[in-house]
Structures are given as C-alpha cells and as structure tokens.
Length: 119
Image (cartoon, rainbow, N blue to C red; front, top):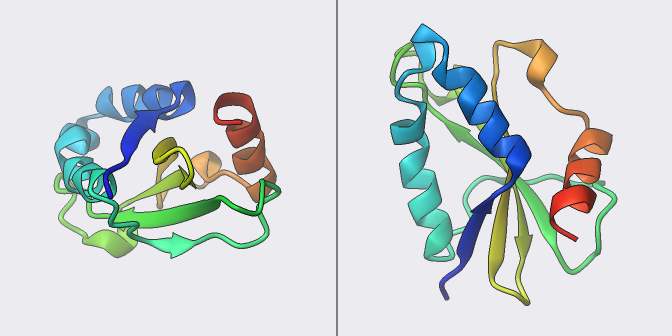
C-alpha cells in the first residue's frame, strides 16, 4: 500500500530553521530514508497516545540520526507524522532536534497543527 507524504507548512518551516545551522546541514538527506519508508506504507516509529484527533487516524514519532553530529538516533531528530489511512496520506507535522528543548512540541501543540493542516 502506497501513501502520499505531505509536509505541512510547520514541518517545512522547521526544516528551514535547522538547515540554516551548521550542525544540521544534512537534515534533508538524514530524513530521506524515513520518507521513503512512509511512502511504501512502512509506518516507522512509535504511536503517540492521547492526541486529540479522530480515532481512525494515528500520530507517530520516529527517531532519526543526525549525520552531522555523529551521536546516533537517541540524540538526533524526532519527526512527528500523522496518518490518514482511508485517504492513504501521511502528513509530516514537525521535526525537532532532541537536544533543543524549546522546539519540542506538546501533545496539544501537535493536535493543533493536525487540526490546522490535516483535518
């Protein structure tokens, strides 16, 4: 089953923010394998419980290594994505760097982004 992967404006804004910083120059290449997995229906990562969204759909968080810092997935990026199975669409909600606490979204913020761009 193939999915259409759609980056939200928030996700694109996050990518732009990180690309401007020296230690994130390869962010697009780093996330490419995750996007390819999602396109073929391999829903990687962990389901995020208790997000206020329609029950048929799911939100996931996946860890991605930052090849510029060489610290592995545990201290790399987190991609939050939202799956609408009936429409075969996956929305890339946001991406953040684990070590930058100010950019880590709350569940309420994730739900608001989903409601704004995906529903």
